[in-house]
Length: 214
Image (cartoon, rainbow, N blue to C red; front, side, top):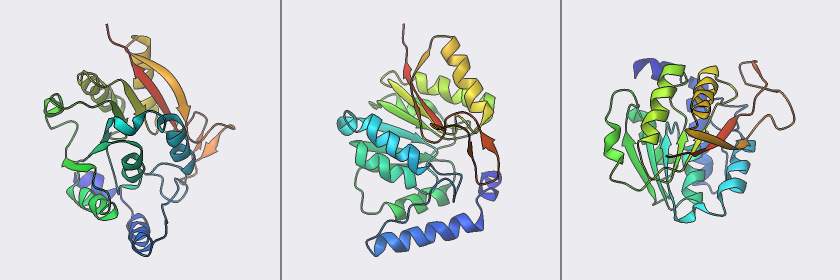
């Protein structure tokens, strides 16, 4: 958890505080991925609305890795219920502060590698938005655990383009015929795009995959 905390920049915290102040005054100041690369881009948010808006209003989404709550807020408008997970309690507290006016979000401290995923098995969860650890082994384990939730029918992988570990893990499950890609999302529709740290990304920002079951 301490290592995760160290990756959150002072600038990101200041931007979050400005976003909270803006929301309290009635305006919206949600940062784009170009300003804070740990969040979703405006392009991804628009694609999520377009792809999910028609059918998600009665569904529950599990957000694995919820950061400051920017994407949580969007999901709370699209879905009937959001279960927002994060390993860092300070981020969950910030998320709750940012989304104080939303009444359909459950906040849960959860470390995907250390805690018991079976706590979700008694809930009907339809969609997972996965944005946790990005190394290959962790993503493989996270996908396997998501698939053990028998009601999950769709998994959305953030940072699919930017993180090789995410991309390789998704490809492994697709090759095993346990996932079927259904939509590419976010940045990259018109060619390579750049992250705030200068990296050029050739693949799309995110991918949505249908769960295939025997």
